[in-house]
Amino acid sequence: MLIRFWGVRGSLPAPQLPSRIRSKISAVLERLTPADLESPESRERFLAALPPWLFGTVGGNTPCVTVNPEDSQEVLVFDAGSGIRELGETYAQERPKPSQYRLFFSHFHWDHIQGLPFFGPAYDPVVTLDFYSPMKNLENTLKGQMASPYFPVPMESMGCKKNFHFMDDSVILDGVTVSSKKMNHPGDSWSFMVNDGKHRFIYATDAELSGEDFLKNEKNTQFFKNADLIVMDCQYTLGEAIEKYNWGHNAFGPAVDFAANWGIKHMVLFHHDPTYNDRKLYNMLQSAKWYTERMGINGIKLTLATEGLEIRL
Ligand SMILES: [Zn+2]
Ligand SMILES: [Zn+2]
Image (cartoon, rainbow, N blue to C red; front, top):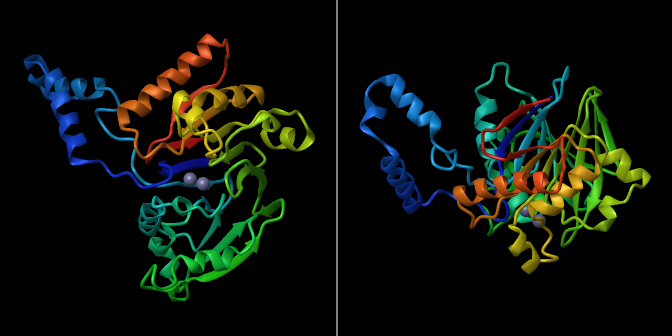
């Protein structure tokens, strides 16, 4: 199973500001010594030793994650934030191009649907898009954001074949089962679990954890226990999470506790706050790692979600 990250930012796209790029370049120059410039190899060594928050960026697009299950032609897309535009362009270069995409929506907050009008394959008549949501009014909601005066082109202009599915509990596709679970978020949201018979992947964003999520009941156990990978909402620092209690997002502390509670092997911190810069996000990852050490939590791998990240299970 291949998991690819196209958008990792929460709430609002957050493009790099010119001032931030300038301060990155300035910090790189401060680290440079004459010895680093001596040869192509020394220059490469210098670049490779830079911290990731300097040499690169977490990315500014809103949520979009794809899963290509093992031994299956399915392309599963989780949320259609602004990252879906790049996904469409990348897949359009593939030969053969995918002729079908299955799009799952955690909920309909703007940051999870706003990229759909810019998803190139939707305008290709040979493509079929299958839309899934456990929320009612899927078709009308998606059409609504493209209605005048919000967008110049109505959804009817998308030339692809479109099928809208109300997702009750789970759907069985080509060798893959996708299950849903309602989570705590203003207006509700749903997490999804993908099981291809070899691995289990969970997409859990816009999900403010509560005591109920830790209960060892049947539904929770089936959904969360011993998953191979979870993409988890970790929008806030610990301090901000206290100020923003009930806003529908987590700090890394409860998220790590949750993953440990369920024996989840790998957690990806996701849905980054649009006001946090790259350095702050990598500091949060470091703090989360220190937290696991301090709490004696072993065996959980932690990764920061970044645009372009690929994880193969
Ligand atoms: Zn969101
Ligand atoms: Zn939301």
